[in-house]
Image (cartoon, rainbow, N blue to C red; front, side, top):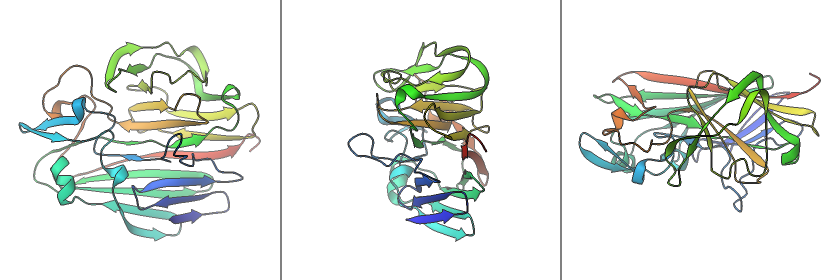
Length: 286
């Protein structure tokens, strides 16, 4: 386990999956991976986000198999550097990853502390000779600071939100649900995720804050660089995942080669893609 700390906040992460495992101030804010409920903390999603139809995709006419959210979350990263308030992990391709994803990638996951904020940065490099299709996303789970009935997700301004739903196979459906109508608060309920995650494509809002009527602490996620977002939990579980994404699950409609997949990123040879999101913890009276 690797730890970063300053006077405001302490985080821990592990080389397995480059996964953030703890965010502590006066208390623990990150879900502690209870295997009876959900056995992860904050997995890194790469080189896909969500599910592929039949867990397969096609590239240059060849069929490859990738399980949900890709292999990064179950891969052993190298600790590339740990200095001051920054921790950098690196993942390079192996013979095993080439069987599922035939590209010469480099993935760096970088954690940086700044006062009461954790910046999570992703760098994806294409060291191969052909354009590289990929998706990347975050999946942090946060402890609810109260009962579900006391907790909500607040936005920076009033919005009308009609997120997309997933079908029974985990694919992106055209079905939507009316979540809020001109409101700046999403009330959490025990049944909110009975149909799995809520998917927001091309989001206009760029920040969500977890708030509770019974707590003086609020946790915010700023995902201003990301086009898509998922929110998810196990039904009635005491955590909430706020998931910034570049990419999403396969749609129900076929699209052919992986390079045509909706939401996919195409990285030219020799280029590096970067994005980041920020997690902050504040007292209401700060």
